[in-house]
Image (cartoon, rainbow, N blue to C red; front, top):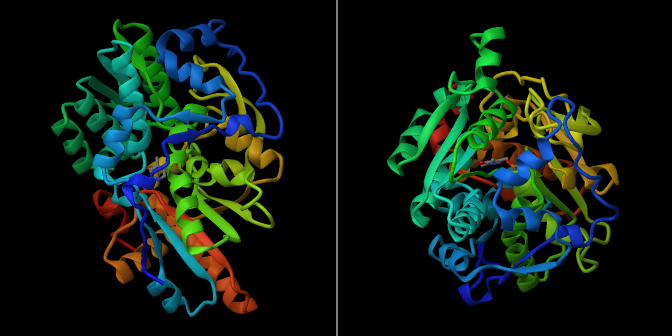
Length: 424
Ligand SMILES: *Cc1c(COP(=O)(O)O)cnc(C)c1O
């Protein structure tokens, strides 16, 4: 079998898949935050209209707009699924490992799949500036580029500890013309409140969300966008899973196990989403979320209502949460450090369809380093968590002599996170 299972550009799926059409039960409705009785109205006002519609639509398949499809093709989609021969041989396992190479996209991660779509809908609505938050900066970078491509201004609040760690990525964002603010900042009330209590606060994704939302609520002609969590983001990302499905069909493989790292849940949702309810693929198949043990919400969190920001200005949703005032310990996997996650992923977990395991930074980065030794490609620290999970499962298969088909999503490239690997 070839190493790269490629899909020809004319076989690229022309539609996104909306998992809301097939979920086993309703996502409990969003409710007002105790601290802001107008939180729902606020989000309706500051978000992009088409994306708000997508968040509640039950339409199973949604056509990808032509301009977005053009960008996908120009960015190199469909991206290959790689049979990881070298890794299998190194581990001496009977498991077959397939890796979806989202790290090959421009700006180094899968985030671009939704950034293009969101910038496109913003432009359609006549919005001139997009405002958001970013953890490790991958979403901020993808959005900076997508906004440049569609001729829109970009501003985002970046978790301070990550922005300091990843200075080269910040330079790249500025090259695209983005305005970046380290969060907590003193330009919003949210930021000032936090700094008053803790002047050395390293920031968290929740604080950055709070700052971005507040900024948009006070400024004209801009809209607030998110790079993860929400149903529309997961839907845009299903271009990943649908390509994988076509690739697996072309080689006649039915996976036993899908693995993705999980922060807000968008690479996982986009990659596995199209498989959960497809009878051709879900018989006896397991789905595994690899988390960071610095923020193990699916493993240790509670399934309950919570806000996405620490002051509670955003509405409350049900997902697994560690509590909105949770500030995770410093680590390099900035994309896996939030206190709560996607309501869709939460429901899948709650219904027993999704397994979860948490990994330490060190064990994850060791897996990333091994991958780099074998392939000359440095995985993003987040992606290394998925690799760690896959390697552990492949070693289990070695003990039991069981042939196991494992498919994982390599969500991003980590060359700009190289300092994370310094002491590994
Ligand atoms: C943002 C990011 C993640 C985590 O986000 P999800 O929404 O959980 O997918 C994982 N890997 C990379 C490379 C990222 O940029």
